[in-house]
Structures are given as structure tokens and as C-alpha cells.
Amino acid sequence: MNKYIQRIRYPPFEYSHMNAEKVPLIEVVVESECTLDNEFKIGKKDSWYVEWSNYKQEEKIPKIECEVKKEVLPFLMRTRNGWYISPDPLHLLSRRIIAPTVLILILSILIHATEPGLLELGIISNSFAGSYRFGPLDYPKLLLFSFPIFLLPLFFRMIANMRDIYRQNEFVRNPLKPPEIDIEKDVNNISISINSVPENVELVRARLQVGVAVPEREKVLMALGRNEGEQPAPGMSTKPPEKRVSTGDEMGTGVGEATPMTVPHRRSLMLESLRVLDSGDWVKISSNQKEVGLSGPKECWPSSIYSSLITIHWELIIEALKGDGTKIKWVRPIIMKSEERSIDIPTLPVRSGRIEMADY
Image 1 (cartoon, rainbow, N blue to C red):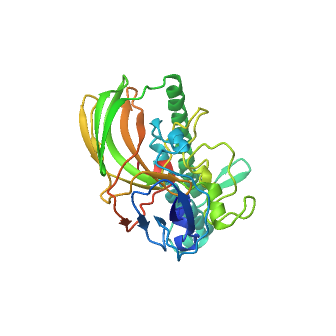
Image 2: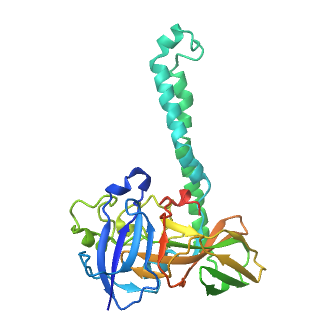
Image 3: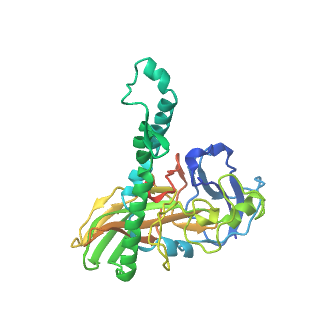
């Protein structure tokens, strides 16, 4: 049996609001017959961090039972394999204008509260100040203009969700067949041959990407010496529903926020963001193109390997357009090999857990 040390500090859903140093670093020893191709360290120990190395006798770290394999885990095959619909662009616009609209509303309230002084100093005019009377009540002029602006993000979000639901229902009624693509793998790059694509689908671009999926909740609690039902660790919420609907559910973070509204289906039709993800450059492709090469990230990542705490997950992602203009993605997990050497990447590439903010 091989003995390994795993260390991980995985970014929570709202990682930008947390001090990484305050999130506990998980350190465990695991045993497995599976051979590790690369010892690796990604990130810094005082920040978001992932490490998988050989065990040294002098290190006293708790041991946990943890399956290690070089095959894609079932939940990743369910949630990151096949066709997915891109969220409506209005989701991103809605989120970006939240801060400005709130600022406008607060500014309007402050101006209304200091109107007498501002009028006396001549900073604002009578036409700008005052109220409109509707029935028995008076409504400040500024708020009548600023409050509708404040509601714009909700309005845009509602329209985007309605569009997304329509597109998802249309996809359920008329599912797409997978494209026929052959893949030849090399170290940190692949070559794909496009044999056929579904009718009314135009391929746009493709890339090779790699990331680390959310650790399994049960193993995280075990490694930290915590019990379910007690106060969760920093970055974790209480236990999510039993049915796993997204890759973020194991940690209990971001459920209902990682993706826009989804329709009932055997699998999610929105591709959830991997919070740790690096990729090669996008390469333009077309449906009649026979062969194209795709390179991985500039930093050479480890070979594919999967465990309950740490996964190195490679995948091919292709962007396409349906005949009706709907943006879609096709995703296929890939088992990749890397150079058999130790890998040290200085920064863990972290991104938003929200699909519309993840820059897919």
C-alpha cells in the first residue's frame, strides 16, 4: 500500500469575503494501491492550497479512509459530461449593476434627508427637491426616480431566468445527440478530430481545462474532527439536501446560487463553475474542421487523479450555437497524463462559484 499526505484549503463559495489564513488547512494521511504520478503543490500554505505528496515517517498527521482512483468520479460524470446551456447574459449585467443602483438609492435618501440645508446653501433647486402627492401620501421626488433604478437588477434577473427556463424546456423537448469526436492525448495537450455534430449546431471554439472539484463533505468533517449537526467549519454551511444536484453540495455552499434557475431534469442543464480552474487558450473551430490541437494551461498540471478530498479533473469544453441562437457547451472529461515529476504551481487559480461570474 502507498501512503500519501493530502493537504487542502479549498475556497468557499464566497471566497472573496474570507481571509484564507483563517480557514482551517485540512491535513490527512491516506493509503491506496493507486500510484501517484506526480507529487504536487498548488498555491501557498497561507492561502488557498492543494498538496498531494508521499508520506514521511516523522510527520504525525491523522489518517482517514479515502478511496483513490484514476477514473472520473460518478458525480463528476453526472454533472460535467454532455451538453449544457449557457446562462443568459442579463445575469451578469444584473449582478454588475447591483452596487451602482444601491449607491444611487442611498444617495437619494441622503439628499432627501438634508434637503433644507442643501436648499438654503443653493446646492439644489426647488424643482429638484420636494415631494409629489398621490392620494393622502407624499412621495419624495428623488426616490420616485431612484427606486425604479434600484429594482433594475431584479427586473433583469427575472427576464434572464424566464429566458433560461424557456431554453432549458426547449432542450428537454428536443435533446441533442453528442458530437462524434476522437481525442488523441499527449502531455498537457490533446488533438481532437471532429467526425460529426448534431444538425443545427455550429461549433465556435474549444479549449482544454483542468481543475479541482469540491471536497466531499463527510471527509472534510472527519479530517477536521467535527461531527455533522454541530457548528460547521469556516466556509461550510449546514448539511444540504440529500439529493446531490451540483458539485458544490458536498461542502454545503452555494446551493441555489451557483447556477440560475434550473428546470426539473435527470441532470442539471447548467454547467456549474469549478472554483479552482485553469485552462489553455480558446481555439476557434468549425463544424467541418477535421482536426485541431488544444494546449493545456501554461503551468503544467498533474495527471488525472481522484479522491474524496482532492481531485485533479481534466476536461474538454466546446462552445457552440444552436440554430435558434442559444449558446451551448459540450463537456467531456478526459484522463490525462503528465510528466512524472514533482509539480509546484505558485498560485491556486480561484474563480467565482457563480456560473455567470466564472468567465466560462
